Amino acid sequence: MAGIYKLYVIGSPGGYMGSDGVGSIYLQILVGTSSRMWYEPHYFQREIQPMGKLRVIVPEGPDDPDALLDACVAFFPEWFKDCPSLAEATERFGRDERMVFSDKGIPRIWRALREEARERFAELPVWEAELSEVHPVRVDG
Image (cartoon, rainbow, N blue to C red; front, side, top):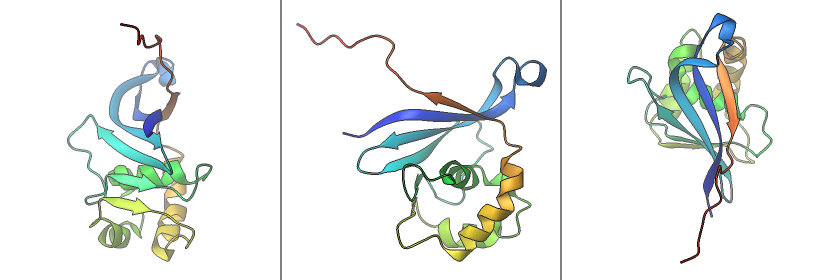
């Protein structure tokens, strides 16, 4: 059975230097799992658009250290607009709704974009939340 178990919130810091959590949410990146892990966006601001038609990222594996970076670039490319490889990557991957990284390796243009995006990614305000049920589900009559 598939389900969402984690989410990342991307937005502006609230309070002094982010001491009050998220001030304004730009988007959430939901993390789901089934036979493979996947990332999908939920937008709160219409101005923010994904890279082309992309709606789902499937990382190489569940412990891929670049999975969140990949999702942020694909789902919030405006933040990475100064990356020289962004236009070519958008042309190559933006026509599909799903980007699935497999054992065949990461395409050259995406590897280049990752490296270009790392510094900018480090400046992106991101919060992480592990999801757990607050109240147990009652199944009795």
